[in-house]
Length: 479
Image (cartoon, rainbow, N blue to C red):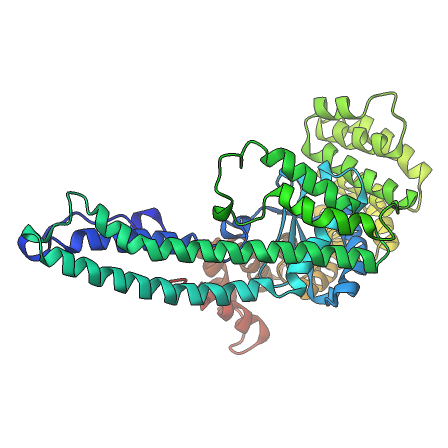
C-alpha cells in the first residue's frame, strides 16, 4: 500500500455532524498501515524484485551444496530453484514457494562451504516446514482479528464522541487512536512471535539436516556469530518482541549445545570443495569489487588458483584484455577440464567484439558442462554476434531449447529475438522480443511487440496464442 493511500484526508464536513469520524478515519488508516507491515514474508521478499545474476559455476556449486540437504529434508530438488541476488549484504531468504534467494555478499563473506551450507539448510527448513503458506494463513487470521478489534474500537469511539461537544475526543483524537491501535499492535506482536518461532524451527531443522548428512553445524554457528556482531549495537535498545527474528545471542545459546554435541561437529569440508568455494569467491570479488580491493585481497605473492582467477577477471573488468587473456590461458593450462575457465575466456573475447574467436572456448565449455544453461545462453549470444546466417540458425536452436526449459530467462529471449531477426523471421523475432520485455516488466513495449507479432501469425496458432497471452495479461491485484 502506498503511503499516499493511508494519509488521512482533510475534513471537509461540518464538525457538528461528522467531527467524530475524522479521528476514526485517521485510526483506521493507521491500522491499515500496520496491517500492511505485518510479516507475511521475509523483509527482502516484500521489497521490489531483487536484481538476479546468472552464473553457471556458482549455480552448479549451490546445487551440490543443497543436494544432500534437500534429500534429508525430503524436498524435491527439481521443483526448487536458487537465485543469486546482486547484493553485498550477508542474507538469504525464501519466497514464492520453493525459491531460495541468496545474496552474493553472503557467498563473498563466507570463508568455508560449510557456512553457506548451514545457511541453505536453514532456508530448506522454511521450505520443508511450509512456513510461507502457514504465514499466509496466520496473516488471514490476523486480518479478521484486526477488523474485529477495529470495529470494537470504533464502537467505543462513537459512544464517546456523541457525549462530547461537536463529537470531539481531544484535539487530535489521541484517545481514539489508542482505542483502535491497541488490537492492531497486539496482532502485530502475535505475528512477529509466530515468525520468530518459525525462525527457531528452521534453525533446529538445519541442524537435523546437517547431522543427517554427516556435516558439521559449525558453519551455522559462525553465521549466527556474524549476525550477533552486526546486531550488537542495532538491537541493544530494541524491544525483542518487536523483531521478526530471535536475537542472535538467543539463537546461538539454543543451538550451540546440540551443534557441538553432534558426531560430525569437527568434520571439515573436503579440500576439493574448499578449493571450488575459493574459486567462486574469487570470481565474485573479481567481477563485483574494484580492482584496488582485489589487489589488496589477492596479493601478487598469492599464487593460488583463486588469486589468479580473481586477478584475471579484475584485469578484464579494468579493460586490460591482453593481460586477462594471458592469465586465463595459464588457468586453462593448469586445469584444461575446467569449463568455467573456458567460459570466461569466451566471454572476454565475445564481449570485446571477437565473437568468432570466442566460439571454440564456449563450445568447449558447453561440452564440459552440458547442463549449464548460462553458458549455452552465452554461446547463443556469440553465435548471433558473428553475423553469419548459419551461426544465427544454430543460435536459434540453442536459445529456443533454453527458453523451453527456463521460460523466465530474459537474456535468452532477447538473444533469441536477435537470432530470429538475423534469419529474417520477423514474427518470431517480435514474439521473442515481447517475451523479453514482459520479463523486464516493460508491459507497454511488450504488448506493442506482441500485437505486431500476433498480426502475422495464423489465428489460433502457437505463436498467435503466445502473443495473446501477453496481450491479455493482467497483473494480480493485492488489496
